[in-house]
Image (cartoon, rainbow, N blue to C red; front, top):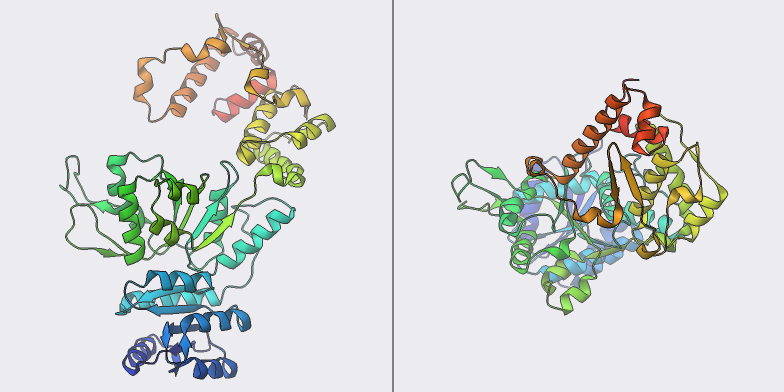
Length: 466
């Protein structure tokens, strides 16, 4: 295997020597340049696996090097060396296309990690999006998005993914991770709005045993759990201001201090974030720190809502129906022409997530292997929906007063409402089957649902004996 080569650009001989010795011990050959002109000559004469450049040079700056490489050798990763605390300069270089940055004084352990990741990135062959996180669509918006994902996967720059709720922002984040050099390491996603405020610091940074009441043992935080991989902050706009300050420091310093710990721990994670809110408006309203916004918004990637790419609806529909059918080993149903037209004209305020919910409901309730327009149960507004009654053995419940039902006390015994409702559904189905002497057709009739719907629910809950 050919020995790797790295170009070092710095006007300080001591820094060049330190970098040459460190990379030499990693079995990497180096060439050195003291200014922009020498660097351009070497780039024209040799092929490199990585370029390390200082930002301040006698005849220019590192930003000029980054732009030159982006124009002539876009596959070559560039890492910039900045003065301690010059975060704005580092952000500008990453927006211009730099792979990553490292601050002076150079930490050798951090440098070695950066070099290994960058060289691995330079050797990545172009590949299609992985099937485990498919992004479905032939529209221009989706094809542009896929090209952006493939390009951003090779960088370490923070990416801010914007888009409406349900449009697939986490899918995009996962795809960026899967196509990059960190794909073999963890992808950790956290919903910032789902963590209780008093537990946030412990969840993000970890804690030491005895640091507070209930801390019975050491706990690693999300940053440590994502070490070497990617940390995705979903709904980042929901972070309280005091936590935003701590997050900003962790990202800038590339280190965290667990609650109750005396020393900080170095971290190596790539940061991706998303929110359905407009972060610029949140900054103007004083609900989101401007400095954190600039740090996260190095590269912005917008995910188009489904109503702006209606040509993708047929592909998405077929993919989702195949997925639903495969889960319970049933043939995938077809959509009637009227159902297809109805979906195409619907505005989808909940985007792809809403489409999936609509299709799952229709798949469950349709009487045949064809989904008709009435099976979709689409309405323009909630007020258009007629009141429905649901018949259960010995009980009829009206939708209009369903919200007034008191949940049994045992609901508190379950880890989540979904687990509780699943258990209740199992109980209802088992009671109906027992009363019908396990005649499924009769049980479905008693429950007021189709036989297909009953079979789907039994298989989904693991109650089907066939």
